[in-house]
Every structure is written in structure tokens, then in C-alpha cells.
Image (cartoon, rainbow, N blue to C red):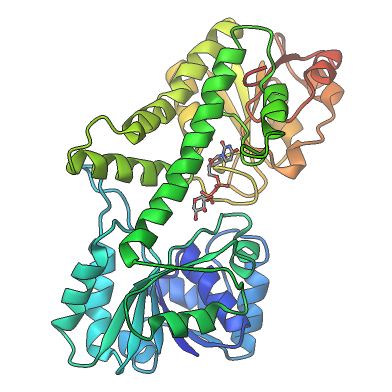
Length: 418
Ligand code: UDX
């Protein structure tokens, strides 16, 4: 099939490369000339395991090309994916300006029967406006569908090649058949629904997961008031098949480019439609106040951060990505600096003072493990203790270490909820 992928951010590049790998002819489009020039050379502007190789391979076979020209990308495309950003507007609702600008730009070049698929996360009802904008600029027949994206950074290629399901938000027309055929090599699990349901499905999934994380963080905080260990609690709860033990680890709260934004957007949407006591307003508040709350607690624990040196291990928002959007490190570091601590940083992919955790720990009074990069999971704790200064606190915000082993090495352990 001939496809156009508009937007070469995270979702756009991965989707374009995967569909090209499946044998489709894909044109990736972005208005950013610098980005397109890099992609043409096979350079991915962010770190994502397996993506560079896929990009080089699919460009070599000729299945994937890139352009900044709408005329070139759209004038032969049977299916066009919109994968541009939908940041939060100042009132918290989704800012749809890039979606609307891209559909207005593509409309004059559409071929008869083309399907425009919205993959960006947008509020229910957006397709009506998209149809109106396109209809004003073309006479050809077209359809607008919604196929939300569920890939995770760090495992994006794998997630796209093996999705749990494909949600097809379609109206009456040929979009259902065409999009089923296009996605069939990836899964047989298609769930067909109205476009507005598909859009709600994306918000609901991300908000459910964000709520789940907030829930376990709340339980972790209660565990700290007694002798319970949240990791044991998770094991016990997880054995209930209705609950499960996956996607359940506590920490400093959820970050990244999706959850904080999607919770804020659904909270703002709820308020906009008169649901002012929405759960999501509270979830957003609990997550955004979590880091200052925990930092105040750690401040007491270590006898005050002022004048101390703190080594931060991990600057990305999670492992296997160099994305720092809404990363805990950003908030932790500014909190520490505002409280007169000296900060040293290490990360394997994000520019930092060093790659080496021991170098960051040298002369530090406190080490904070913020991201569970593989490189930071098998630290030589005795070596770490030997280069640190008293009181030698090891704050494990991901509960990756055995508290007893850390203590045995001469460090003071603090996890989350244990
Ligand atoms: C998320 C969704 O999972 C994905 O389906 C959607 O398409 C985009 O948003 P992503 O942001 O890449 O993906 O990362 P994810 O692995 O889901 O983690 C999101 C945040 O939650 C991270 O800050 C992570 O550290 C945190 N998290 C995740 C937890 O604190 N505990 C968990 O158990 C899981």
C-alpha cells in the first residue's frame, strides 16, 4: 500500500519504518527541514533501541523515503497517518493546532478515496472538525479514521511489530477493510468502534495506567508508616488474576511525554464538560506534588541536603530512552539546587557529567538511583560506599536493590514503600 506518515517525532518515525519494513511504500513528511535531512541520512534524532537499523534497512530497499513536500507525500497516498504533536494548551486541554495545520496542508493533494488516519492523541469529536477542514479544500471523496497508538518509548519497535490490539475507529465506508488489510501482518486482534470511542479508548488506557501507578504510590506511602514492604504487597496482590503483578512498580510518579499530558488533558476535558470532581484532577495533583513531598522527606532523612553533594543516576524519564520530558531528574535536580545541594549526574544516553556511576558518586554524600538503566542495576556497592562521603545514603527510587545487601556494603538504604 502507498502511505504517507505526517510528523517525524517518536510515533511517526517508528510507524513509518515498521510499515515500510512490511513492504509498503512509505513517505515520511515533516515541515522541519533539519529533521528530514538527518532522517534521509539514516540518523534518528533520539535514542530508541532497534530503530536506526530499521531506518537504514527500509531506506536502502527504497520502501521508505522522506520529504518536506506535502504535494510529493500526499499525491499518491492511499492512507495518510497524522502523527504530529498535541501538546497541552495553557488551560490543560489538547492543543490541536498542528493536527489542523497538517490536515489543511494535505487536503489539496488528496487522491480520490484516500483515508486520513488520526494517530495523534486527540479528544473525542476532533474528526468532525478534521472532516470540515479537509472538505473545504478538496472535491475528492475521502474518509477520516482514528487508530490510536499505544507504543512505549524504549520498546517502540517491538510494540509496533507486536501490538496487543489495533483499535480501528471508523465510520461506514471502506476504511475498515483497507486499514485491516494494512495492519494484518501485525495482529489479528482488531477492535472496531466509532472514532470518538477510539479516541476515548486512548485517553482511558493511559489514564488507567497513570491511576494504577498513582494507586501503588499511595499504597507505598502507607507502607512507609509501618513495617510493610510494598514489593511484598505487590507480590501478594499480583497473584489475584483480576489484578496481576505487571506494570505496578512504585517510584517518584509517572513522567514522559504521554501520561502527565494525557491526565491533564482528560482532567481539563472533564472540567470543560462540567465534571469538576473528576478523579483525574486528583490524579494529576497527586503526581505533580509527589516529588516535592518525597524530597522533603529525604531531606529530613539525610540530615538536610544543604551543603551536601548528591549523585543522580539516570536523567531520562525511564530506561532505554534519552527522552527527558517530564523526567523525575529534572524536578529532583532543581529541588536539590534550590536547597543548596551540589548535584553530580550520570546517564548512559542523556548528556550528563559522566557515564560512570562511581565517578558521580565520588565525594557524594547521597546517591539517588532515578532510572533503572541496566548499567546501574549491578553496581559494586562496596566500591560505591568506598568512594562516597558519610552519611552515604543510597536512595533507590525504583526499588531495584535488596535493602539488606545495600546495608551490608556500608550504605544507608532508602527505597519507596519499604
Ligand atoms: C505510555 C504508554 O504506556 C503507551 O501505551 C502510550 O502510547 C504512551 O505513554 P511511555 O510514556 O513510553 O508509554 O512509558 P511507560 O513505560 O508506559 O511509562 C510511563 C511512566 O510511568 C514512566 O515515567 C514510568 O517510569 C512510569 N511507570 C511505569 C511507573 O512509575 N510505574 C510503572 O509500573 C510503570
